[in-house]
Figure (cartoon, one colour):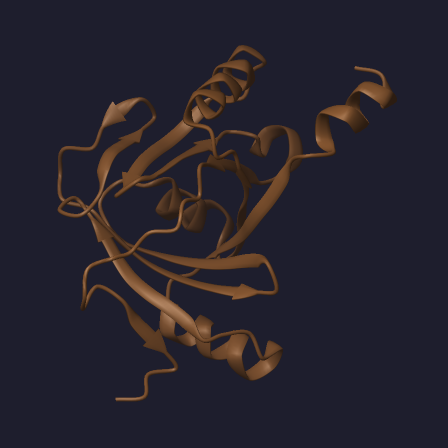
Length: 175
C-alpha cells in the first residue's frame, strides 16, 4: 500500500483497548489504582458456562476453563487485565513464555460481517486466528501478530453489554 492508501485505510479505525496479563489480578489492579490512579475496575469471571465459541488454535475447548477479567475506562479508552485460572488459553501460554505485562491491543469493528472479512484478510496474509470467543453479543478474535509486532492483536465488535446481576464486582472492593 502507498502512504496515501494507508492513511485512508487507517483514518476511521478505532483502537478500543489495551490488555495486560497477570498471575494475580487483585495485586495488579491495586498497583494500577495506587501508582497510576486508573480504576475502578469491573471484575468478572469468564468460563465455559458463560461464554461461547471458545476455540484455541482452531480447536473447540471442551475441558473446563476459566479466566478472570478486569476492565476500566480512561476517557474513551479501555484497559483490561486478564488472569488465566484454568484450562488452555492463549493467556496462560503468554504468561508462561513472557511473564506479566502487555498482551494485546484490540480494534473495534462493529459490523460483524466486516469483522469476519478482516479476520479472513489477515489470515490470508499470514496472521492466524489464535483464539475466539463470544460473551453474550461480544464477538472477539485474537490474531497471531506476535511474530511481526511483538504482541497479539485482537479484533472485536465491542458492543455495550448488560450483564446479569451479581456477575460483576467493582474493585477496589467496598463491601
